[in-house]
Image 1 (cartoon, rainbow, N blue to C red):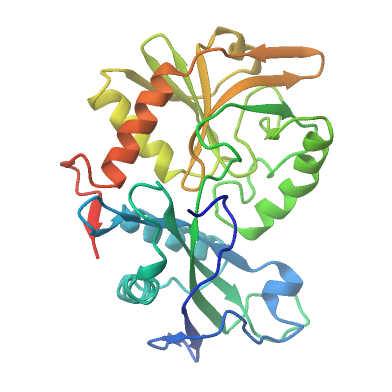
Image 2 (cartoon, rainbow, N blue to C red):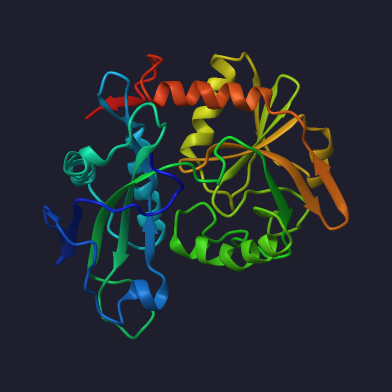
Length: 326
């Protein structure tokens, strides 16, 4: 059984290169390592973006992908914002399918509830001294079997608000750029020193509204309402979008995507962190300065978790066209 959200090895990787205004067709590789210039724009100026999706083992042995088209669309948005050439849809899906085929034997069993985590990324690789976009790029895909993102799977975590910001008001918050995650490392370190699992970031302009954690969106339950923050510094989450649909269509909940004042935490029944890696993780406490907001229930979050997982592993046949067999 694969434990933890960490690298557990891989069979093959995939790399494609952009040069002279076009992408090559790419190829599988036996090597996890790449060789790039010490002055590559990814290293010197942070020209780096990535995606995350999973391949699941169904009970009947099929291999399933969940909404990979949304990962491609978000990658296009990230590329455009970071002045990178968008990865064509055919190249993206060809790479994903080749990686799944090459690493199919590493996909954890249906019973384990593990998955094959797939990490597509694009980095600038041109040697340059001046601050400008690269003219050469690498598109890569790496896959590895993984378990739960948080240590104990679907069990509660504790969050602490941070005086630091994950992103600027009109910066890269809605882009899946490596820089956003670099910005979250130190605040998370401080939160862990205080005994918490992660940070809950507040809006970078006023620090009065909640945004997200360093690696997940946040969602709240209030009666029969599913509520999640709206902010241009929050990364659009495929998992969050999915949960909104499931909450409305399966649990008959009203969905609200809006600004959420920090003090409103006191009125919520449930709070959760959600994302491809984390799926849904209930939050038991948010500490803000001397105030502690506590949540003792996660009944509806657990229903959404089980529903989402049932769709991802093929136990429930959905009608949205989300799941594809590869």
